[in-house]
Length: 618
Image 1 (cartoon, rainbow, N blue to C red):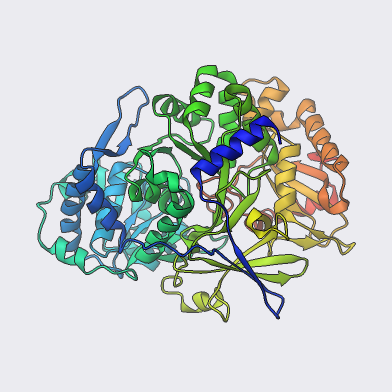
Image 2: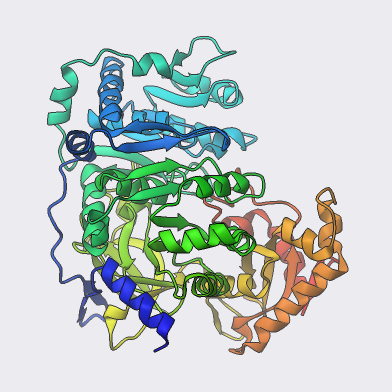
């Protein structure tokens, strides 16, 4: 074992609990995986965490934000946050909000967003954070309208009334909610958030808080549906608190040192909200809200914030790591500070291309002499989100770990795959106002049917974890009868076409070979072609250097071997970015393969037919 590998494994052993799992092979062919470690007692509700830290560490910074990286951070301590939560909760009770008339939040992450959510949950009112893209990017507001119809909210929050004016106008006939805004200029009939936060706290808050139980609905979180209005996943207090109790057991270092986080991941998704935000709150940490995102026009803000506040644990998605690696290569001071102060890097295990894993590892070793521990986890909105956790240093990207304490995993043979199902206190009781959909989501043993497949890292040693093996519903057969593993091939394709491919959609259902629809990284394509920032997208994608590089990437993928299901013979660079209205992309930058194939069926047909000058052949 190399010195660097020895060091990183020793560091991981100091940070994390050893991976353990029990395996049971059943007569029906299914396999049960369970943690032998009992789940530790969990808090009654999320509000207990806030009340506790406000007493124990009243002056510690809980939340911080800044709009302009040139300005200082605006902070809120635990004690100040609790006072404002009590005030806002008093206002919420006065509005007679309830599960049937919850709080809807349409805006990005902010202190106001956090305080409103915590206040609602403090008195038993579900909060529903809705992706701002449905209000600010959508053209028809159809999905936003569907969500508002389903929720029938009693209050709606937006950060800026002017920015959200078109969306508010579109949904106005669908609700009778009070609209609250942090910035109300130019709008009539709205309530200022400052006035809500200035409400005199009342005794009803304490009584409502005391009545909360583990089954009280805490949130509604929407899934990224490809058609129609996304489903509202019920998140109970038990789901949120047991998820974090298990996390603390497998990441014991969270209780040993001050936790500092800098995070942009949206609270309209379970990763940013239930995993990251709740981790800071449960462990008395400080969360700096990153106003940047891993997109060209906003990543400079993320880098400025990272230079200001170095987190102890760093979270991101593949696109973010791609951009971070480029920045670390160019900035020695940032690179040295990052690898010296960040104790662990957390990535989305199912989606990180191996080339990004290797690049981050190489930079770390070159900078500080060893690789920073890189870990991951797996789950969904319905599992709040933690179901498995890779709390050990894996040998390569994609290991999603072992079941967390209290959670049971069932592996069911499905063709040549193992379909994974989940049961535990962290699993949703169902979908709001959708009993039929709820019934279809669970099997006869009440395991949630998540739709993913996994494989063992080592079948003889289940404690070495599982690898994500794609979506069962996404895989398809070629005319040869060979199955195409879409999840694996997508990641391999992105790596082979790096840095020109932002993401890939795999095509070829019932065809002779595989083909790629490619969402290009336009900035990287411009740089490769030597074109300026103002060059037209069509000119960039038609450039001989770009097309040659894509062709070379396809050839490289083929030379890795494995047969016709492991490489693509053709690729098509897409001029139009993924559509929010079409359900093609989430806030985190994840692509919905099925939605893209459906919405762009004409392009798919042209691609598989090999027609058109834009098609690049191997």
